[in-house]
Image 1 (spheres, rainbow, N blue to C red):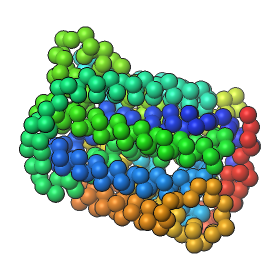
Image 2 (tube, rainbow, N blue to C red):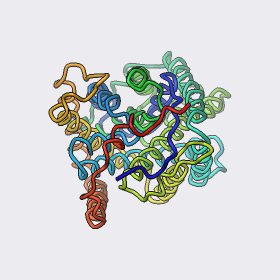
Image 3 (cartoon, one colour):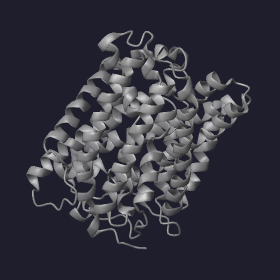
Image 4 (cartoon, rainbow, N blue to C red):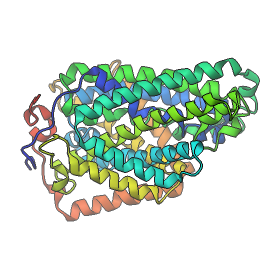
Length: 449
């Protein structure tokens, strides 16, 4: 199988761009979604779940970076699993990655609509979400450097806002609030809360999707991942702990806009700072919304280029050097999801896709160490095999938790995977092989400036 197009992606991204993309992809997780974990575990129960998931992500990212720098391919886990396990491995990882990013996008769109509705009750949630979808499809088609520059700008504003948020509510923190009925469901609640703790970090792996557009990926990708993860760890723990101590945490455990509500509790709903904060609160959601469209479109592009999706989706716009049809396709999926589920359901499905993809990546790492010991690995996982093994075991724990507490949604995910596998076999794609130059980017993507 050969390339579907002679157009190439453009190498323009530096470490600061990768930090902006990494943090931008995830930072909406600090603004909403995680608070549903309080509803199933309480504050202390969810804190324990968050610490477990933080360990999972630290060990995962340090292991995943080995794969990203050794095989800097826009398909991410799809490319690693194909190389390690063949066509069906690539199919499972690719499907899981698509679910991860394609469904994270409408979840964030729901929250954007909810924030706007909080500010301006006359604006309907769904229609606002659809408008954001169209706008950011156009921005992502306009060019990767322009998109990345926007990511840096909007992410810096979002980080600054979260620091301001923590500074405003910290003086009002009361330990008695945080510890009140803090673990109502015991360890069972901790188990149930794991998927919502994943939402704090979900999508940071999306940096791999722009690997073909990074200057000197061997050096710059690790810098982007590590600096991004450190930033997110600090913000996640700070926002979650401080928010849980300003009032009865149950008031914030069932809404899509916990931070504006927290500010209104501290300052009063009529305070001008409350309205200003809620307005700039859109920055964090916009940063992640923009990033997930970017990452999901690159996944569609990579799978189409490799023959797993229609070849037309792998076309690159001659003027902007972006995969415009794959960007449009990711937007259409987001449109459909907005009409079909609630925020919490979409989050669970997105997290399920992410966890399966993480597990496939760690298995691929172990297999490639054995199959290709001479593969150039500019960054090697520290403490191997302990780090990838810990990441794999904690991912398995999260997977069991998701399936146990979300049987119907897990069934939908599995049914989609089985349908994809059936179509894959019927089309004969499982008998075809992707050339090495498709899986090892250096041979096929030029360093066009």
